[in-house]
Image (cartoon, rainbow, N blue to C red; front, side, top):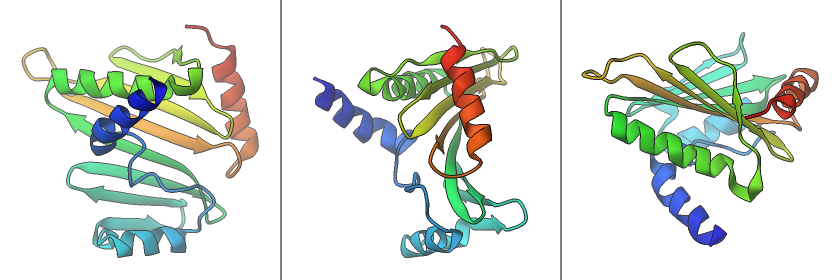
Length: 171
């Protein structure tokens, strides 16, 4: 059953939001990430900001942010805008199901009004889902952001402090 759920999530959510081809393995250099983008003809959509250690990809309405620390990839954030509430709700549920795989506890973190923030801690990464509802009932405008942060690379003290915060929070 777990394998069937994983396959279904991969097929549907992978195309919309989640662990898709834009989520690259952590520990790569910016040069390796750019080579990956170039091999898939995405290099033309990439903006690399060396000073901030960020690489932004914006292609077909999909915004992906790659975050580097000392030129090593340690976080990937996929953000999409939805103008259909039912579709946004379905994507959010799919992402929450993905986050709960392997019996991980998904925490509902404090967030401002109009925003939902969920997180879970896995062995080697932290997965966050932020949903921002900026629209109205008649004109939905929902931003869904899925962020995966490595616990092996990047600013370890900051990452582990957040992991501890997530672990302390209850549903």
